Length: 245
Image (tube, rainbow, N blue to C red; front, side):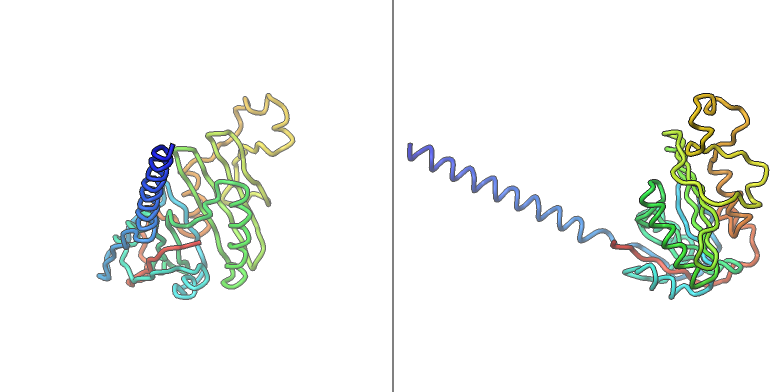
């Protein structure tokens, strides 16, 4: 009997040691992620936008934007390394583009792909527009067909449209369509019309896609897929960092 007790105690100790090592390794992995590699040599703009989210703010105050979003581990970065970081869980605040500065990156925690995230984004965009006059959000990802745009002026939401094609539903629709959306009969699963099954078979409906997101972004502020065509981008560095929220 004593032998079995001793064996049990030994096994328990071994399991505890193994679990502690595993937990420690995991903690080390999460706390020691590879630092973002950046270059501070100015370069030409780099187009982006597909499978990405970004915020357009009518300002040239990059440092103030970094302060507001609580960006950490901040480094100056050029376009090439900034966009690379943006697609690898980082956040890039771009050089000034005309009257606008963009905040982009898969490291932005609230990507607008759920109602909870949309509401949080709405509050955040309103805060930005209250300080800078105007702020916008755009998101698109063709795999799940997530496409979203949002505009806020002087602290008030003007327009929201957010759609997920994979589930054939709109997350939120608010405000009147803007001029950029003229002529579109956007699908809206939240509408009274959508209560009828026939609605989903209508041929006069327009379904959002990444091309439409870029078109609206171009008419509202900046189309990030056409940066190389612009002549009003300031020859300066942007800022790269991480958001730990």
